[in-house]
Length: 364
Image (cartoon, rainbow, N blue to C red; front, side):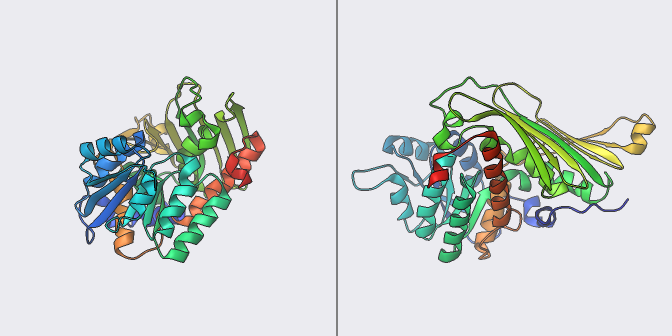
């Protein structure tokens, strides 16, 4: 079967041998800082700590007690909260032992927080979305370039073994020519105006929080869409509760959706001329892959099911990639380059204009 043509970031991910053994050091030990004690930081920081060439130096929070509690539970050396003279973030940014910072604040604070860290000469791994608008992403990459530091959006899916396994199969031609991608993600959450997912100023809603995952799959195998249509349901807090995109790539099509209002199967199906591949369960860090060849389907053979093992919670892979890049003096990751972050948020800007979601950051 002919090999499939995939996006350049996929080839970079598949050729990255360090991702096969994420707990093997790739260079000198780096001093890490963590901005925010949010739920996502609780999940990610243990995976940073698992890296043998990582040292957890400091964590910042607006509240000193919260920072101290987080530091105690995760083995972080120092805790910085707000004081009368400076914020916890400013105190962390001034710490000379902090070389690279993981930013886990809500979307609406990413530009502010990452800008401060880049200006302080810190390398940064920032949770997705990298920023709320394309203008903000352009500014962050400009600052990273000007200060000679590394910057990466934490789209962990690209580095995970399940995603890489699926891409190996597709690149080897097991699906033939990819023609379509169908993907869904989401769950029902009661509306809470105080939660970041429902706060407009925090970049709440489906688009910025969830849609990067299904779009990671379409982008990997079909590239950038030539045209698209969107539909959405907006909630009382002016964020999108349900969003669906139909994408036309010329040589293929895609349909992706995300929701906060109903429980849906988390699933991706990639269909080609020689077969189909389905990801069941977590599409952001796949562990179950189902492969059906066209010949097998015609002969009545059952699909092949493969279980993929994941190290830690699955975040060690993106942190290994960031660590390797910093150790080697790279400004950006070939697996998660700045151009891809910008391309995605440019699409989000256009979709928001179409569905009627406006953020305060649009006017800055």
